[in-house]
Length: 88
Image (cartoon, rainbow, N blue to C red; front, top):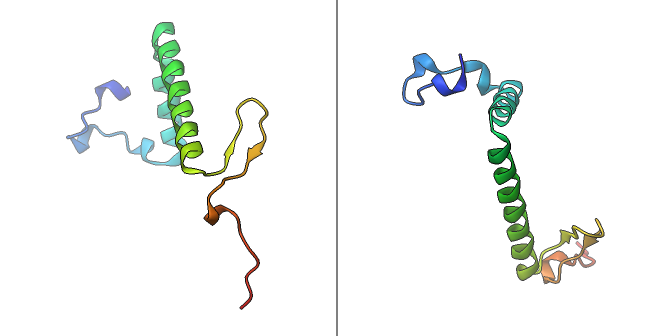
């Protein structure tokens, strides 16, 4: 059954195979493959913007992040991110 034919409110039409990790991955790939070129391009742009937003949020909170240009870890500036020496 095609994913478009599934009614989320009717368990009789559910593809129970898609509830496993492998099935979920297969369904995701099917949905992605069903996109037109323009839809695929728009989704890529939207995902890129979302990643940029997450990066800016981490920077603003002083959390560590991977620099997208150098691919290196940038350590956070928050005190919680700088582990000290603890003695029990």
